[in-house]
Length: 350
Ligand SMILES: Nc1ncnc2c1ncn2[C@@H]1O[C@H](COP(=O)(O)OP(=O)(O)OP(=O)(O)O)[C@@H](O)[C@H]1O
Ligand SMILES: [Mg+2]
Image (tube, rainbow, N blue to C red; front, side, top):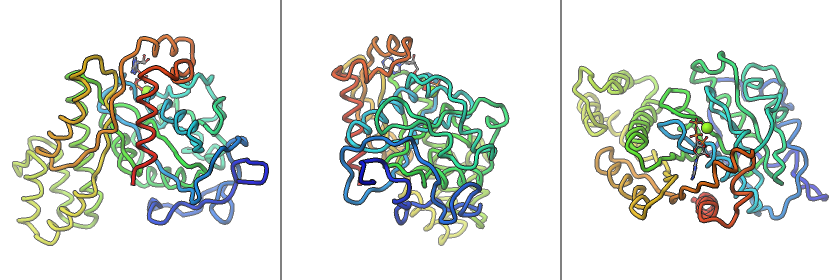
């Protein structure tokens, strides 16, 4: 922070152990020689900076559309900014960008697509102010080119560059579905947060999403081994190996090569998605997070933490219609409070 209390242009490098390895050059076009950004979000007043600021990238996904991913991303961003964190929210929903609407920001000229296709020199050039102190926005892409599948190295390059943005928190709205674009952004972020609503189609979508991302997570740890092709087959439910569950997969690979089986088991232990239940209406809805965590432990062998539940509130769509963030118009509503609690939990994650 400079003496005027503004967010510093240069300063925090990505914390040790949180760099994302990229097949692309470390320094991208438009960066300074040091690889640090040339520009930042317009100067914003800072209340409190932690002694050792560190960046945390959170990807917000969900197996299904229309469940509140953009609402949750924007609201968590506002909560974290109000708690004194510098935050940039990024619309990485390559097929249906609308995060700016959730924040009440008119369609910005520069978007993430401009960065992906090198039309701007640095990602900082497309960060715009949101009207909320300490909260910046990178708006989403609207072209078909960007919506097509990006290569894995392109995604690691994007995430690697995003991880260098000078902010305490970077929240990515990764959009709906289980395409590789969505799943890879979920996995490449430091925290993957899955939104689910208490409806059968959303719950099924969330399980599908978790299974797909778990397999992809295992796949990413097995470069250069024949086990990779087993995982690729396992992603097809009717595969020739008869693999139906992650347990079957681990067993099959273990039989093929116990050493690789061991690597796979260790990789499996590093899969730790978080869950947030949105649009709860009844007391039993509040228990969905815990019961989903229990099912994941039993059937996928995966631990997931539930960050809480967020109540349904009619005021949300009313605020949406007026293009005003709900947590700004109703900060004391149970819905806004529970989102703020989830933001507090994100802050205290180890
Ligand atoms: N807790 C809530 N209470 C009431 N309405 C909600 C709540 N959460 C989301 N909504 C409403 O649900 C709709 C979808 O929300 P949102 O756009 O955030 O979902 P999304 O998952 O990002 O959708 P998409 O997949 O299309 O991007 C919006 O009309 C929003 O106002
Ligand atoms: Mg959305």
